[in-house]
Image (cartoon, rainbow, N blue to C red):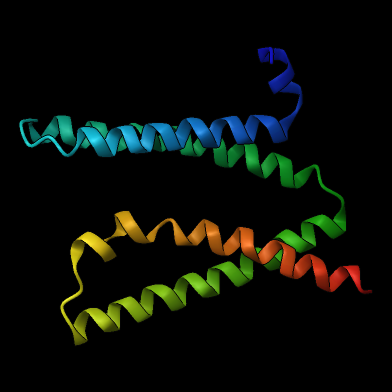
Length: 134
């Protein structure tokens, strides 16, 4: 796949940028396991994936803008469901953390963030099914 092909297909570009961001995220996470780094180095490593995610986000917004009105509506509704499910997850974890001692290794931000895009991607077919029957 040539670079020119990716530039002309915003969907492919978004997928490539998402993969690059995920690789950078897990690489940064792995590097941060080392305690021999200075604080400024750790902060720099932690922030390196941020511009990559910004590029992915910009590319994904372009993908959604290129969709027809019904597809955009489906993605907006899926995002609304995912946002509410994310709030439910985070508020429940916040209350559970006050009720019992949640293990950091299981319920830290590093482990919980992954549920947010899952909520979104699982909401898309649910919302789409609603419009298929109309």
